[in-house]
Image 1 (cartoon, helix red, strand yellow):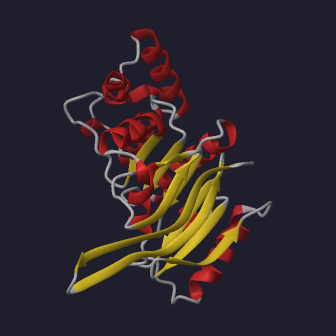
Image 2 (cartoon, rainbow, N blue to C red):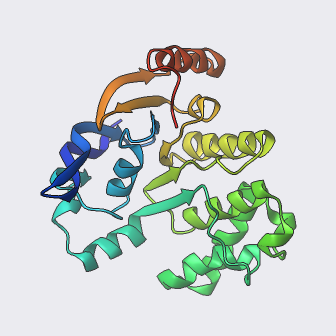
Image 3 (cartoon, helix red, strand yellow):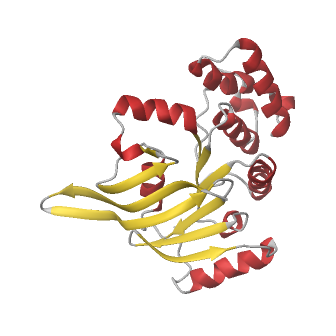
Length: 252
């Protein structure tokens, strides 16, 4: 595999001269194409800030973030917006669906905003509805569907433009255990069968066990890293728990 994302010595500060908070502290790592990377850490560890920096929602105070040969820290706001639209997909804890649109229309909105042709859009929507097993609710409104179905719709919308990277922020946070498992198995299918690169922030050990690699953050730095390798998921889950035991088991 080759590195698609390179995070090089990044820092992020908040506040003013009288009170400065360092949320990310000289952080460096890479993400290969086709990886499924999880980021864990206690509240205030910097994991959400890191996700926002990678998502181009926020800007670094120092350092560089490369997607391929593109240094996003050097892009203008307009160029960042275009980059975000063409390269990134987002799945958040809150579904962020429009209640006045059907499930199918929520997915098609992303393609419409990008100016996709009608035929291409219809083909993409049909493929995603089937892939994410939400064909039966395509004509329903979000309030008529379950939390798991809403999150899979949000996932389909994120994938509509074939993003090079899927960023997920606590995607199972509002789901029950069965819906969480279904979504995570969907992520695994996307990762293994379609080669989708995924970076997921989570405090949930069960969710993290689906990843191929976990980065553990503390005080804005990586203090440990776990590789799953060929290990079964249950064994990887136990390894994650072992690491968390050294931090008091706190990941929220």
